[in-house]
Length: 552
Image (tube, rainbow, N blue to C red; front, side):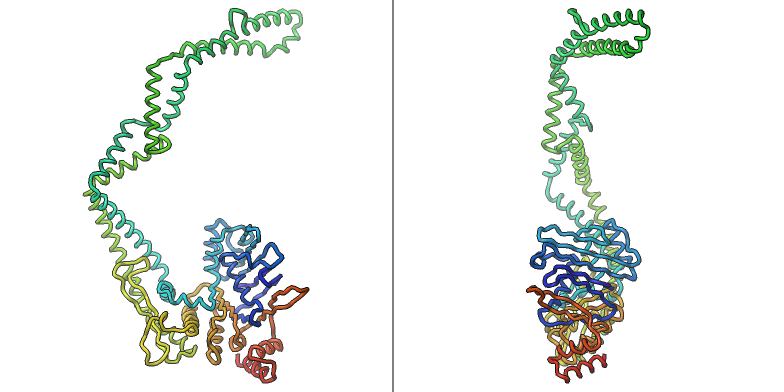
């Protein structure tokens, strides 16, 4: 259940903390008092788009915080794990969302930052929200099929079927691509052969580009390198007195100094090693200079190799490795085309085998749907009778598809005849908005045992009904409250009287500012609120209110 909802600086709400009870929760109040803000706050928690115009005037941020207590956290924990978050502790899930006028929106789950997509994924598991127009979802045959599958408990079967269907479609696409490539003629074959031969002829090796460029740099700058080596050698041991001659003279002086004062030897410990290293350096520079050969033929060869690589890079990839990858892919495509007959036979067999698996799984799914559709229709019809459709007819008609689809071999169409003597017609064509709301409630009631979403919110779906029908709607919501937490935002006293807990939203003016608050009412206050909803504060209205509460 939703244990509390905290709203700050959202529209007319300044700062409200709403502690909720289980079962049916009734929410009432004058028109315009701010009841819709509750729905707006829940939608933010569910990851819907944030409208910054809802931030309370004069404030820079608004925030909504919700705490859910869950008996079974497995589905929620799976979403959290996929997002890299810790699982719920003791069944508690805390969601917070903050919106600012500057656009820096933030959302948190159990105090860890998350993306909007994570909120949406969690929202689908936590709240089933129905507004005045949400019954239109019943017009969607895709949604109707989801409801039938939910009632049949075939979600796992459907997942297995969908995976088989995707594999079959992938094989069909591959086969069609190969058949199309065959019809494309020899042009593609000639192009692939040219590409493979051009790259193969270059005999590229991974990493060779860096080696060749290094060799080319040395060959192209041979004269300059020789000049630099000569300059280094001259300074080390030139005829006019190089560094080594000066160091050797210093060595002799050091030797004489040590003869006189042996203690000074410690001061010159590193000198001899420095002299040896510079002597070795002179030898290495001379060897390096002798190995330098300015070979115009080698330079030209390296130029041609670099040109070849650059030409291939412009055609097939930005690096030698990318060119080699392109070659491997082209060779694979070429092999497929050249061995087209064998490949066509292989793919044809694969399509046939995968279609057989689709047919097997699809038939099993269809059998379960066929057995379940009449049961769902009967269950919905029972609830419809409770909601005032005493002699209506409801059916879930299955129609086969010409080809297997992602969702199976058939589609479903809810058929409805609200009045005796009328023919069955698609629900979307026959029911008025008031009737659709009751049908939605009947379907939800039929699915209550299978529906794992813990919180249902009905925002004035009892509009366009009244009298005894409103009471029937309330009783049906109260019945749902035995298995789910149900929030009913309503204008009907018949519905509100059946709530286990009753909250009223009020709008007050303080310091020239309007703000909405929500508080629980009991006993006499509840009688007064129901009397107001009944149309007045006369004693007769109070008596009627007391009667409604007593009957509830």
